[in-house]
Length: 66
Image 1 (tube, helix red, strand yellow):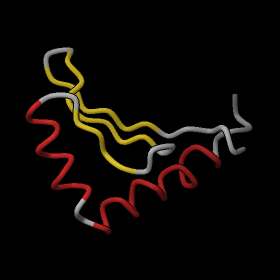
Image 2 (image 1 turned 90 degrees about the horizontal axis):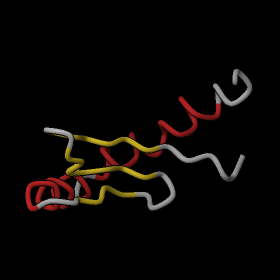
Image 3 (image 1 turned 90 degrees about the vertical axis):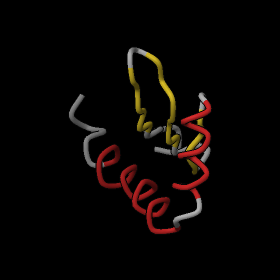
């Protein structure tokens, strides 16, 4: 169960501009807009804790289904 990864991507016009990766543990921006939002979202501890909890809530509960 250690190799399960939760990814939350945000795209606009088929361009991914920001992503939360559970292996990294924070948001990563890929455009100027995404970098600015990543800095804002990463500075909020409750936002990071919420995204980290999604791995356990979503991924680990559904691992046996597929």
